[in-house]
Image (cartoon, rainbow, N blue to C red; front, top):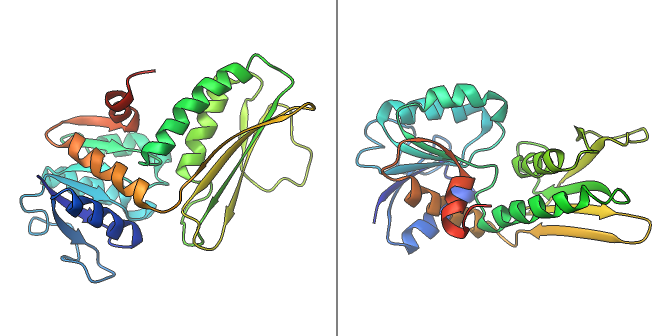
Length: 247
């Protein structure tokens, strides 16, 4: 059993709390905007905490990380949208164990590994073009999703004929070397990501559809258990390598 601080007590925070308590972990919640145990990250709210799980917003991720580092609290950074400041984040958490992911769902991370294999195959078959699409609920703060960017990175790494990512609305013909990853926001959709390999003869699709938020919560609690007692800067691949083995 461990003590977990959940920072950001919205819908995801409440899902994480339920999963953590079902595994008999002690939980403390922190959020200035709703009824949580504490309004802010400080010595009092982090007393005896083994790991923090951050589900907040991109604008506060780096500031929060610096506080976790000052308080020596190992961290699961489940907040997305800050990846353009990766080097600053590394500097901010130099004294703790820190794990981040665009998506902590174990199923999504299995998807990453499937796509890595599939895109290497498609690289050798020029007749297939590649496109992608993601959908999320109307309250999501970033677009495209962190998961979409990670999926796109896998394709761009493995498929020689795709050099550039396009995420905007296209009022033009797409270039042969562009990968278009479209986004939609609406309703209460937890998250759907679809990769499409299309030729004149047929279409191959790889899709992950989250039925609810529990997959993200389970993965983030697993990450908190994994990061306890560690020091260093990790991502979800390090956890996945222990679960299912390296690629």
